[in-house]
Length: 444
Image (cartoon, rainbow, N blue to C red; front, top):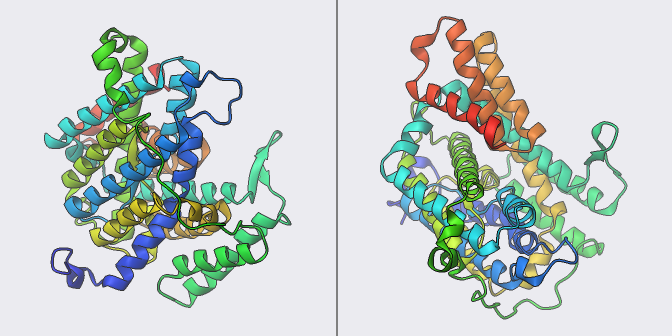
């Protein structure tokens, strides 16, 4: 096992990989609770049952798709990256596809399935890998820093340290609130351990925060540890219903837009996550992503698996950077994460302790680590600074990794052409320029 994952070459060991894998799972575990609520439209009252997906089935589909996808990533691509149904895409699925378009959720799953199958074709042909490797190093650094700001903002929001404000969009929350104080405690403790260079500081910080939260009654102590697994039957295979029973429903402009949106967002969210995690773990070689093709095919297979099980697009999670920060460098950490997702099927009551207050400090600290790539950007060259800056700032402001990438990639060919650096622009970047312009005009 150590030889297969090249522990000695990468300077890691079982302890670091296990801690990293557990940390990634804890940072991602919220999806097991959030995804069923999202896809069942639980927050929307007075909807017919036919529009709601079964929460128990979605919970199982979420755990199984995460386990299978993460296992693919660990064994095939050997990267310490966890996969699960993505936030944002599940909201698009529930609130746009089902609630706004009025499309049955079964047909929505068909759209997810189609996007996954197309991804597999693109990955096998090497086109996805070619695109990722065509992205210039300066923009890759910008993507990593932008994602760092994005997940820090996400952590601050989850902790209610930053809240919505009708006058200024965002503002400082109530720092005296119990859950917020718990997050601040976890943040301070983790920072102290990080400064003292304690390995696994992020993981230990999450454990200490959880224990304190239960002690002061801010986190509910589970009344039982094990519960029976719900049935996945209500959603399993539903993605094939429209193909078999109503193929004409797939020949519409709306359905095409759905598939394209799933394709676009998953493609560039995944690209950004892969580059960011690989950069943080020190796995990039000559500004290129080793085994990119295998990582992308793993992501594609995960999406298809999730669609068949009964959940929205399964994608690489940026929370994996928390595991990397805790020491993970190889696919063995992903195997640990995958096993924990399977075990979560039996230990669902324990998920109650993984609250936003517990995960927020990890996200904030990882953001601090990721923005270090800002130092690698040539800020003195305005033609580089402009697309890099827009890539970075757009991610937290638009709440979308993919949109940040799109905006930066639109400006890059323009500034490079005007500055006389045409030869440095990869031909694929021109194609992406056109695609992103069309995306903003017709889809966004």
